[in-house]
Image 1 (tube, helix red, strand yellow):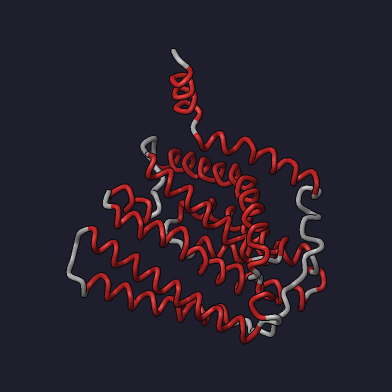
Image 2: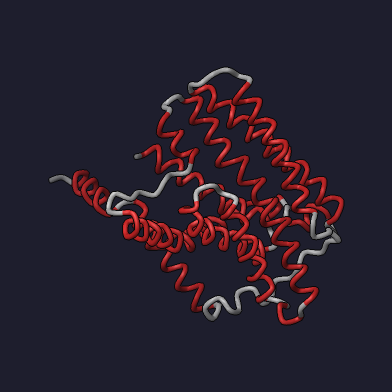
Length: 290
């Protein structure tokens, strides 16, 4: 057996996901030791200054959802197609509505946040640094996300039998179902570049900021780290439950906790966007590889 065959056999048995977990466990262990199991990790983070009413994030979500629902209706019922073109139209509706949601959020941020977009956590001068640290953050949380997936699969097999399989995300199922390049390009654009930006604007930028402000303004015991972690957990719960497949919620919650931490630790929303986009990219590439 030559060297190439040895590597092929090794990767077929171990798998790329297992290899990614190795550096992730090292980073996770180092972070736990350095921060006292996370207790000191956000003690120096500060609340973003704003005068935004607590209902504003719900208003932004409602405006986006209404716009998306109308676009999806038009894409589904007025195009009169039932093949791969319907998938393209539906993803186009999602892309356009997400960009519309980004525009609404930017308008909101300029209206309510002190220092505007920079106070919100958007500063292109930190983009390169945020990309590097976002990659490290994703590696660190990767073992925990995989553990959540494994536990859900084990529980599914226990309750529903050995044949249980976790349902894939709808977009990943569409990638596997339709081999057309146009379908895969529009799904890649939607899931990796457009939707993560809007979701981070909404759930991290607006919801998480609002929840933390409420907690730290009203109860002093939530000042500093405790308030930040509570806000991250609440916004992560919202983020997970808006996704339709309940089996995905634990893994999404863990991933969202990482994205929320990255936002609070750095003050940069670009960092959580990088984590979100890279995770979605890994999921798409894994589906294409399979």
